[in-house]
Structures are given as C-alpha cells and as structure tokens.
Image (cartoon, rainbow, N blue to C red):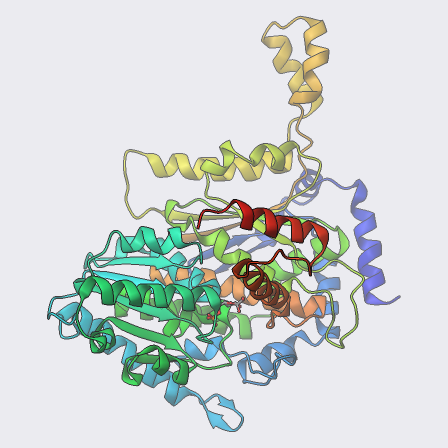
Length: 543
Ligand code: F6P
C-alpha cells in the first residue's frame, strides 16, 4: 500500500479512539510524546498520535526527501523555484565560521558587514553621534513598512519591550489608511524623529505612499532644507536605486538580498527598528536563539525534532483530518502580536493550490491561523474551541518565569493555560454534568433541558510549548521553530512555501480602480457589483 493510503487508513482507525483513552492505555504517554531541548519543553502528547502515526509520517517525510530539502535550504540552493531564489534567512543568524554560497559567492561576509553597520548605527543613535539636523538626539523612531517589513519587527519590539532600556520610542506605520500615519505623526517632533523606510522592493504601494507622506510632513514641519532628509530618513532595502531617488543617501541604506523572504526578514536589516528598541546585544541574542534552533532542526532525528514534529502534526491534521484552522494562544501579555505575525508566516507561505510540479492540488493545504493571548481569549472565542462543531487544534505557549512577578498573577496565568489544554482534551461527560446539576438542586425537568448544553465532548487536541522566560534568546527560538515548521509542512504538502503570487491580483486591480475613482466618469469596466460600489463611493465622498 502506498504511504499516503496507509496514512488515510490509519486516520480512519482513529475514529473510535479518544485522546483520554490513549493516556489511560499508556502511563508513559506524556513523557513519550514530549521533547525537551535546552529550555524548551514541547508536549505534544494531547494529539491524535501514536507511535505508528509518527512512523508513517516519518516514512512519508523520507519519501518526499525532507532531509535533502532541509539541507538544500541551509546550503543556499534555489528551492524557491518559482522566483529562482535561494531561501537563506538561516544565513542571517549563522554564527559558525562556515561559508554559505549562493551562485558561487559566499554570502557571509556581506551579512557580517551589515550586522556591523547595524550595530554601529544603534550605538551612534544611542550616543547622539547620529542625530537630527538640529543636533538633537533622536527620541522617536518611525518604522514605515508592511507585511514582513512590519510584522516581524513590530511583534518583536512589542514582545521585548521590557528590554527597551533607553526609552527610545519606536512606532510602526504600515497601513495605507491615512489614519495610521496621521496618528503617529501627530505624536512626534520632526527634529527628534528618525524615519526608517523598510521595504525589500522599495516599490510597495502602502510603504511608498506613507514614506512620501512622512517626507512631505517632515519638510513642511521642519521647514529646512531637502538635504535634512538624509539625516532623518534611512532605508532598509534591496533596491538601492529607488532609495536614492527618494532622497536617501546610499550610506544610510542597510542592504539585504533577494534570498531573504519578506516574512523571514526580521533577522536581516529589517530588524533594525527592533535593534534600536532593545539594543544591539539583545538583538544579537535573538539571532543566537534562532541559530540554536537551526542547529537543532538540522541535526535532530525527525522524531526528536521540535519543528519537524510540530509540522507532522499540522500536516496530519490538515491533510487527513481536514481540520480547517489552528489557534495560537500565547499566555504572555507581550506576545500579543505573535498570532498576527504567524498569520503572514504561515498563510502567505502555505496558502497554495499548485504543487511542486505545477499541478493543481486536490487535497487541503495551508490552514487558517488565528489567535489571541490567554487569558483574554478564554473570555471571547474559547467557547467555540470547547463546544463548537469544528475541531480546532491549539498551540499553547507559556513561560515558567514572568518578566515581573507580581502578587501571584503568574501562577494564575499558567493554571489557566494548563486548565484549558486539559479541559479541551478531557471534556465533561453527561454523567458528571448530571451529578453536578442534581447536587445543585435543579428540578429534573430543568436538568434534562440544561444537560446537553453543559456537556463538553472533549477530545480536542493541543500542543503545549513551555520556555523558561520570554527573553530575546527565547523569542529567537520561538520564531525559528515556527519558521521551520512552516517550511516542513510545505515540503509535506508538496508546495513552494516561499513565493506569494496570490497577493498580486488585488494589487493590480486596486491600481485600476484608483484610476476609475480619479476620473469624472462612472466606472463601467468591472462586474456590476464592483462598478456600483465604486460609483456609490465616488458620488458620496466629500471632495
Ligand atoms: O504583498 C506581500 C509582500 O510582498 C510580502 O511578502 C512582503 O512581506 C510585503 O509585501 C512587503 O514587501 P516589501 O518589503 O517589498 O515592501
């Protein structure tokens, strides 16, 4: 029997098995399905997994050459074949002395040079050596970018805000909605503000529009020379020519390369705003944390490999169980943006319907990723996770030690996290509910009516990932685990996780519609719904 068929059959056999029965049958189940690596404790025992599942998934991984693909990525081969690019975010956090070649050229010297440039820049901004045109020290940094040029640095800056010792305020502007930039500009002083234009291509509509709005605002407010722009605007980009056209001195440009995907770019110059927020040493710790995971990912056997196991589980659930989505629930106030960051990482990577040999796919690929911090999410959407009609696996992410110990809060936070995973799995049976209702002295008529509403089926899977503490090193590890998980899942799904052609059509159409909105004539070249919407907007907007 072919391996995919075996997996299908294996899944069918699970229909009668409950998660709590698996625990009852195997007293060592928790230990058996836990991986401890350094300070990471990854418990995947509350899943529809037995040893046969892992063996079959490992066999499948071998069949699709996972090991070779992993090596090809690390070695700079052009695995992003639809864009003819290498995929080398791992090189950005490589601290070994080994060269990494792309087209016969070792990329490490340029990476190290940009790291040095970033480190010096952070130092110069802190010391005031790099200052505004009036000689005042910068108090505010405004990062203008979108997608990978926004989510990674904004998430990390928020996650590590306790490491911001200088008080430098770092703001993020991403949306073309003018309310976004207006809100930030209304708070900052042009004399003490540094703008970072973060765009791999330096052509992205939202970023360019915001960058020019910031420049106009700066020139108007500051009322000095165009040449002041060079002191207050720097760029993180692969496109030197367009940066220069904008008025950015090439010396104030921090380069990166086409083999850094947008959603994998936090480790490159795109991380500069985070480095300014937390200091270079902390930023380097983040790189080192990711480097640690790279080594684990590259060398650990599949069944002891955190990113590989977590990809196995997601692939298993998506392709064979057809679960539509997955919730990411960090029990950390500071990881509020983590689910949003993962949405781009995972859905832009694996939301594909054509395989590696350019054929249309007939099975389920990328899952919907969503989430929110615990315990807040418990009081909003957990109802659906516990009693809704879909099964939605959950990743719980927690920290043994908080950044601040205050009045027993952390033990309560963690108790809630463990309780949710337990409740999702064990549920609450009819008998238990009946007994509770009888004890609460409700009439037997009301008990029968109420009982079904209070039953929890349970049998809902989750992973729990525990770290010691949310530090820069830990955050580096956490991000890298998910990056590699997404890649492995893409290999198992037989797709290219590193392109994003699906974002292009909307961009093209928005340009056409912008032209329709800018003319005096009614739009008539679209479908009737779109024509009507455009014309209604035009007729009702105030000029
Ligand atoms: O539109 C999608 C996308 O290309 C993302 O992949 C990328 O992270 C984002 O836009 C921003 O692109 P850039 O850094 O080139 O402005």
